[in-house]
Each structure stands twice: as structure tokens, then as C-alpha cells.
Length: 266
Image (cartoon, rainbow, N blue to C red):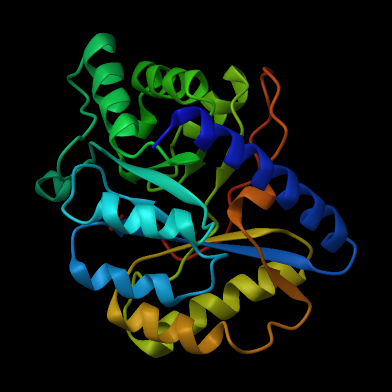
């Protein structure tokens, strides 16, 4: 896949997304949905049936990530690299390509670069786990420098309330977004519906809301049904439509969003 063609397509899609965003901003608030942990299972292909506004975040070096990513790219779906980062605990679930706290700058940057090269169509990056690494100043600076060098954006999954990812990206002039709601920490239909309704409530209060979920059967079933129903005065949009214009600056942190307690699940 030619890197120049990929970049040109992303720029075209970003421009179209900007026009769509400007046309919708006066009519409704927006939600964007990202499905993390894509690539480990053939069951993940079921997510391709969801509306193309639902973005996928692909785990690097997993059996199905490249094939699913190629199909999702053909659907003009937004794609992210779901880069594993060291957590406070449960690091046996990190998977291949993880960024670890004991890596030096050269090691960490090389690891992240390999992961980006393995999925050349990604538009952005978000953290898989990372409750430890995202709180460490130097590793986050090294990470965001690679994000900037590859002209990507960063989505802070906010697996720790002490994360430095968003702040670091703002300082280095990298477009950055933050997760507001985890959809499926609890996998029952009732719990997923509560979280989705919470996201709609936040959006109707006047903010754009980013939801992170996973390709669990319960989540896919819920989204296939719910996204075919009206959302009221809320638009389902591509995450790229919510992209801020970043400039290097010491930006003030947004107030912490009140959501379900962060859990080390993604």
C-alpha cells in the first residue's frame, strides 16, 4: 500500500469530515465511537457490519489486524493503532509490541515506529491499558514525538486519572482527543445501554463525546440495534470530525469528566 496515496486519501477524508462537522455543528451535538482491541479474533470481522462512522483501533502484530484494517479502510472507516502500554497491573494482557516503562528513548521509539509501519493506514493512536506508562513524563514525550513525526493524532483512553498523554500532546502541538465514556466495562445489555444513554446525555448537554467499546458479542449486538435507531439531537460522527487544531502551547487541562470509574480493561 503506497504511503503517499494513503496520506492523500486521509487528507481528502479529513477535509470532507471538516465540512460535515461544520454543517452539523449548529444542529446537534456529536458522539464518536471507537472499538478497541481489534485484531485478535476472527470474530472481530463482525464489527465491519457496523456503520462506517464507528472507528476501529487495531492491536499491532495480532493475527487479524492487518486484514480487518484493510477491509475497514476500504469502507472509509477511521482507523487507529491501539498501542499496548505498561499498566500498573495485569501486564500479561498487554500483547505484542508493548511500550514498557523500562525502555529507553531509542527502544520505545523504535517499538512504536515498527507498530505504525505494520498498520500503515492508521490515522491516529490510542493506548491499550497504560495506567503506568501514561503517567510517566519521558515515555509519553517520546511517544507523542513519534505521533507528531508520523502526522497522526492521539486519543487518550484515560485508563488513569493521572495520565499525562493529553497534556503532553497539547504541549507538543499534536492533535489530541480524550475518551469520555467506557461503553462495556460491564458486558450486560442493560449496563451497555446505561453507558450509551449516559453518553447521549452528555452530548445533549452541549459537548462532543467519545465512547470507547470493544468487539464483544454483547457490544456488537447492542450497537447493531441501537445505531439503526434515531439518536435524537445527537449525530454519530467519525472521530476525525472531532479533531481539534493543535498548536504548541502549555494548554490548560479540561476538568475531569464524570464517567464510570476507569478500569484497566483496555
